[in-house]
Amino acid sequence: MIGKGKQVSLEYSVFQEDGKMIDTNVGETPLIFSMGTHQILPALEDAIVNLQEGDHKRVTLPPEKAFGTIDPEAYKEVDAKAIPEKFRYEGAVLGVQDEQGNQYRIRIHSIAGETVVVDFNHPLAGQTLTFEMHIVSIS
Image 1 (cartoon, rainbow, N blue to C red):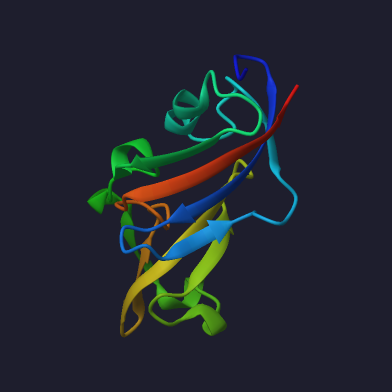
Image 2: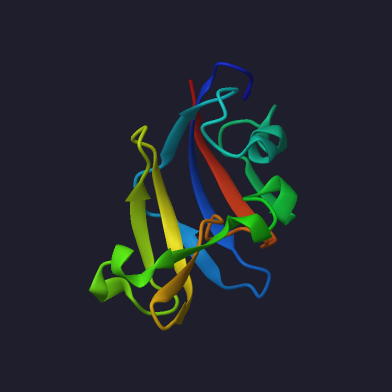
């Protein structure tokens, strides 16, 4: 039975509201994590607590329990020269690193002349997501 401190191995698929699958590890290496350490979304931990090996669970999470709501303060204007030329188009996603070494994915929201608006929201912010999970093993 899944409980705090247990090592859990699971297969998952993630779907957007329209049913489009956006991620899966089914048929690949299972995700392995230690329960209670928030290596996965806390709402997913809550959903699988007490499940047994072999169990399946489908969970739909609103944005606030998944990757958050869209924060309008997370849009920042930068000089276009700060963005590598190959990423200077709307919708481009690139990785950046802050002074502490933390890495983030940002998206180019819009471009107006020499000004680029970048979006620091998580790419899945604002979305209701459905997770289908299969508990492969518990140790």
